[in-house]
Image (tube, rainbow, N blue to C red):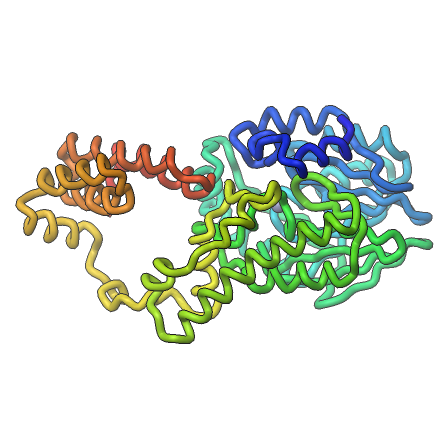
Length: 428
Ligand SMILES: [Zn+2]
């Protein structure tokens, strides 16, 4: 596959997002196609491994420098392709953040070094990466649960142990390997421990997950705080350096300064718009309910081939802006120290004349296309009458329909999982 030609086709809108988004339902197929060609040389001494989680490799006068190490499960394949591209030892690995799909290959690199009787690679990361690893060690079961739900894959496991970096830095770090200079910068976006790397000599930018060929996943309902404004700030800092090649953590390289500026600038504008609108309302004393009703994503930006909202949902980003500047209190006092969901459901269904009456109205709303309200009423009825098969089935159907109609895979997955769960184990 000619990478530059492939990127041209994406850029011009000749490929659908399902074909190139590595997290799409056609992920396995996409990944197999990507992996087949191995490493692509994108500049002299620079290779890019397009995978579900990419790896960038630099040949320097002091061995290979890797940006990220890829996933654990694809590591053997990566190693095979790497050895075809260069037989220099891997001396240094820079981690763009601590997510397992970027750090999972470190074990393999250590083992290979040991087998060859060489020192293990020197791993450099932001100082918050060890904190992230500690957090994961305490919550790996939770992370397995939410990632199975998010990716609708019951086989997903989450690592219980991590390969820690050998060296960490705070805000800036200059890494020099023979003639090659790598400038590492800390930023907050998808995570609080992110590093982006700029090579001033070649004007190459390795931005990690700050750019991933879909609308930024700065919302994710099931994960810890993400940074909408910080993400935009980092993108603007990258643009100021006028990179000529962008090698992202997911998706494909972007070649040429104009395209790189456009892609980074549009992504920053999208994030800035959501943060600006949300903050304005917060400063006016609005509740979260009002904020969610008023703030709108700039839809024109979401039509760009690199900003389709097929992974995260703009509404989830708004919630993370709220959580970053505020807390979890949403302005509704009933929810500050609430009654159990099941107790509220029982009261409301009794007032309405029974769960069946509530289900009936939920189905009317479903028919009229108001799936949001239909979900509220359907779920109330299911909670109030967990033994009523009709209520449970109706709720499950509404949730399944909701899943079908969502654009973002995160929203789709949560509704789809709830449609199944409500049948087996109504919540409350
Ligand atoms: Zn990633």
